[in-house]
Amino acid sequence: MTNRGPLLASLGLVIIGVVAGGMSTWVWSKTATQIAVNERSYRLRALNEIVPPARYDNNLFDDIISIRDRELLGSDDPVTVYRARNDGAPVAAILTAVAPKGFSGAIHLLVGVYADGTLAGVRVSMHRETAGLGDQIEIEKSNWITVFDRRSLADPLPANWFVRKDGGEFDQISGATITPRAIVKAIHDALLYFEANRELLFAE
Amino acid sequence: MSPDFLDISRDALWRNNTGLVQFLGLCPLLAVTTTLVNGIGLGVATTIVLFLSNTAVSLARPLLRPETRIIVFVLIIAALVTVVDLFMHARFFDLHRSLGIFVPLIVTNCAIVARAEVFASRHDPLRAAIDGLMTGLGFTLVLITLGAARELVGQGTLLAQAEMLFGPNGQNTSITVFDGGFLIATLPPGAFFAMGLLIALRNVMAAHRSTDKYPAIMKAETAG
View (tube, rainbow over the protein chains, first blue to last red):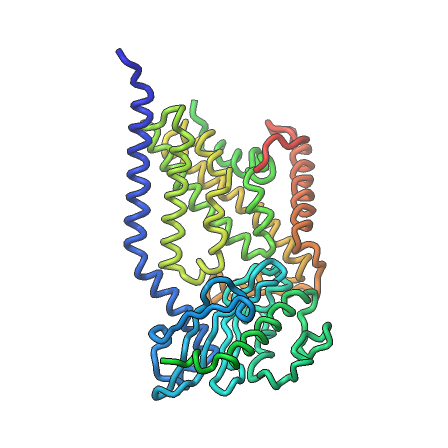
């Protein structure tokens, strides 16, 4: 008689593996569509908070470009830009810029810029800042992030595009300086990118 | 010799509490308990996975061999966490967004493999399921206590951002006890202070109860 122990052990392992893999695959196939729909409507909610849906008439998800600029957009990876248009005329571009130097790593932003270069609004889409301090940048926790609404490269003047602690015009968050500093810089950089690449951003 | 349900519950909730006595699953426990709502969220998700994994491991007993059992546990737990994660993502999107990072973390909670190895693989599915449920509840109680204490001291509030868990109904449930707060409670060192005090409190209580079979823990033997 040969020793059948290892054979039985492997057989059990194979059965469990097939069942576990099959179950995950089945649930994934049943939920994938719903998850994509959820993600998209969540993203659309955030985009519509920045640029009100009444101001544009195109489908934002059908009008996307990818751009790359490590210096000004904060990421080595291509960055997605959603373009809002009304009757084909440019209304706003929403850049998924990154603030690379947050307190706990990169902070992912949605920076909305109207065609005339003023900020439509900014939202934080992903971050790992300290709970109770740096996380005040989320719109759900405080309205700090709305201080950027309607600002532009000329307002405040370049010398004042900093948090107060650095001699600028923007309030920091009490107990957190690094987080707002990173965000102010990232927004200013995104505006610089917008100014230099307006044609490209709205190209069909 | 199978333990009765009361024994299982008492073990899981008090005598052998995962967090306070066995010191298992400390990574998610300390990292996540910055607020009460976070504590509840991770507690509920962990309890669901523990309940399912204990049941599944017990049902898979005919296929378990000593050489492969750990691999089988890992396979079962990974598959269950994946399924729970996908299901929540599809059905409870906002809840999933607030718990998003905690759900995959459950895989790394060694308390779950520990229950599979120590209990579920040696008992019938009903007992295993109850053990999973009770162990999860015991873990949840520690998460809730720690989360509440750290939120209260750190921010002066309780149940802040409850709407992430309970939807719009939770919008105005936040209780502000006082303004400000001691920042350190929210930061990682605060987690260790609070956990240390909680373990000490449990030891004092256990020492005063002569009926307890297990004496106060004087030294950590396991951690993870």
